[in-house]
Image 1 (cartoon, rainbow, N blue to C red):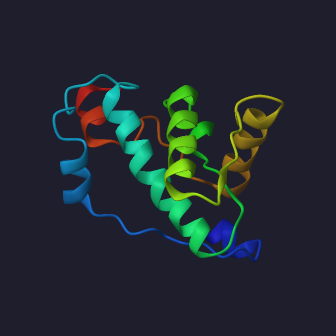
Image 2 (cartoon, rainbow, N blue to C red):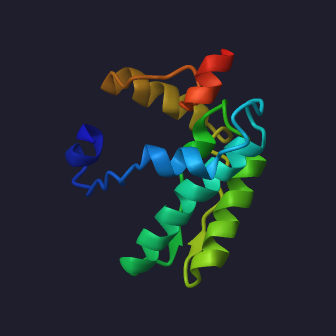
Length: 131
């Protein structure tokens, strides 16, 4: 948030409803990392981003999820294009943020800005499994 503010970019901190998320991924709690639970989670998150993009009159949306080595690029792309099709009028900007010097740029930004760098995906079920 402080990085966006420093660049003069509006930051939107989306609402998070943990109980709804739990019900959305119910039945997939024991799936491995990059399994069906992850795809459902990405769909839920990116659908809200696509809806917000549409509400604000944007033509495209993207995600930084693809920068994480803990995430499946294929699942992110699938979820992003699905969210775009569900929303209509907005397109998902698919980008591999791990290539073309972007991974090095990410590392540099982490150091320069003292960003927290989590070494797991962020899901409570992933954390329990040690991934």
